[in-house]
Length: 286
Picture 1 (cartoon, helix red, strand yellow):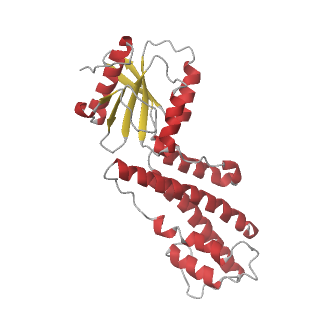
Picture 2 (cartoon, rainbow, N blue to C red):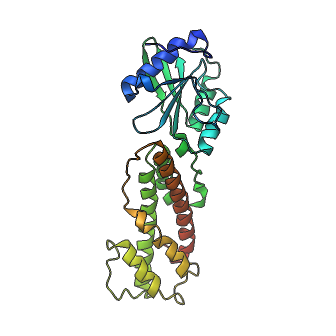
Picture 3 (cartoon, rainbow, N blue to C red):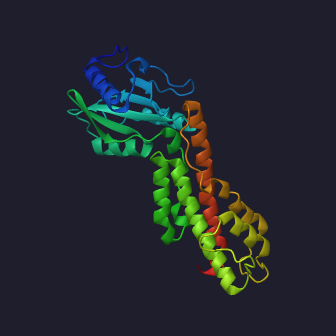
């Protein structure tokens, strides 16, 4: 199996062919769907050696090169991120290639979310997996904003998002917010600032019901948390519809782009809300 190239130097033809053969065998890519040296989006300059749609509606791009990463890819990566394109970009390198800046370039590829596949004869080996560039556009969490006890969980949530399961990542942050809310509700009940006259199950009862009752009946004159106003608690209530939302597979690339954009916004908003909630409940010492 071989493709006809116009731009790619002839010594790299076998590398590109073998790389796409690997993806065809392992990802189920159809040969008829492969584009050679074509532009993937009118506003993105990237013309990868080979590209093809994947079964899960991403865009696989394979760039054959003697180097693990080249600076000219930076603009293309940023363009894909800016437009929310679900591109998985792999650099295919011959195993015997002599990249003088290998360590530096592999780090640059990782930072950019670009994968690396090493080609040896007729086989390939994934050295580093590519992330969907639509997910790589996520705003990094400033972990220093958070107490140390929350940092591992938030770092895990961010990596989960970037690794391709944004709905699970959102759920992880919602879990943190819910846990803190239930602790705050319990503390205010013990202190007598919230009567819990309905005898709601603070530990395991429906979260939205608990939030509503707490927001309505918290004695804000007694509770030493001036930031816990009705409007602020309503922000927490606003995330509950998404709390147990399961991920649905997008039906096409357009739907995937829309989903990723929505989940990126939800994730970033949830992290900000969590930071604000931690600050607001500091007087409770929980």
